[in-house]
Length: 544
Length: 88
View 1 (cartoon, each protein chain N blue to C red):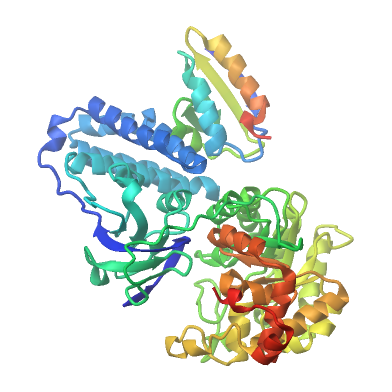
View 2 (view 1 turned 135 degrees about the horizontal axis):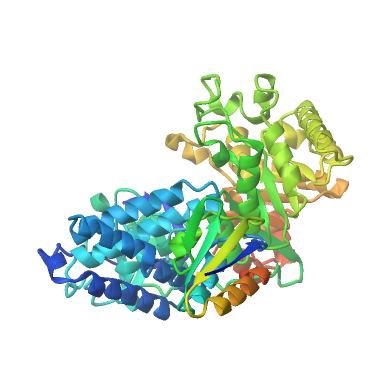
């Protein structure tokens, strides 16, 4: 059994499973507890969590929640509902739903996201009301992996966290409170589907929070559990042992991602995805895009570069407000700038929003899915149009491209003369190089990041960038996999953009490497082991 | 009852952190303190109420206080707003 999901807190741990027990509801409980006592208890439970929180970030989230759970607006609503005949449970449910809806309706995306906090508070209150206080929800006797569908701050208050060595959840996200909690406690955590089906009390499993896997196939003999490796947050740029600085930036697609990137010491935003702006029921206006991008830029690490990727829509994801062609091979189809023939003003609002944003933040812009010089010229012309509509004489920001279509690799020297920077997108580049759709699991053997074909493509691109003196970075999964870091540094890359939660992991890895050793690793790969023996380098350490 | 018109100057508007600061300050007074923005009026001692105003940078606000310490409340709360509610 091996489950692949989302790693939300890095580290590897092996231990037996213990499910979180949702205590059965205590019948009639709500009639014995007065609203005042309940109010007090709810505040105290959460305040205790806040006081004992080990991370300053978590403390701040919980303190904000304490303010919310003690809020007169909430308790007035609850009292009003009860005065008109509702039970305490119904009153809590109704009041929370009403307040959360008010937040949902706010234009500001950051404030609208507070609706989730309100719902979290609601869960906390309902749990206090409906579960019996004396039941132990997690009766682990030794170090164990906590498994549950969901885990709220209120749950964690009742658990002996010192015995939790790993967490596996059925639902959640990188930015949920439990993800932040597990990172702050440096407990490996993974979110996977089908936890009910595969994970049972007492079974030993290996949880890998970096790879996002849960497995019973790679157990270490005799070990009860492996002590977790801790990753320190480095707020500044780290250097290799031989003093070469390496930038580790974050890939983000929401305000929360940007907050996490900041919290985990990212040296900037190497990829700001904008597809989510287009996921609604209408084409997002310039102002809408500007406001959301502004909120993200504001939450991002201050004063550090933010590379926005022009929207890559079309192909596999239909949109209700655009008549996108249905094609047999969406990944080879009418995507991103290729849609301009049909929708010439596709990028106009976005380009103007980005240009306006550049007045307050150090933003850069890159275009995805560029395959020919003509594609680039077309995008450049759109930028000129956006510029002149804002009365700007010069383009105030660097413009670059994603290197993800193999033709660009062969044209890298030509492109390097006309663009301001390159960003290698390994996910698409690898699938296009091997002509293997990455969404087809049967073809996963063609996802070969360290294949000589990929290494050669990266080399050509890096060489072209170096000759033209333009910056080059890498985003995509390969950049975030520390087993490839020595090779990529050896290839000359000095800038990586990865999932926010991997930033400390990458920084820690980079500080252990030396560029000289990494270059040897690269030579070993292209020339084979024979070369390695002749030059007497010790390479084994790279394959940790 | 005293009131004062102010402009919200802090960069992130009335987001969680500045709002929490405002609420903590308002709670230190016995007077009722309210903040009006457009057609909405919020209880300054309620974080949910303040956040739900959805006020961003540049918003014109009216702070009102009514009670024994209303004058001190108005002065100190206006001062906190002009100090960007703790934001740089």
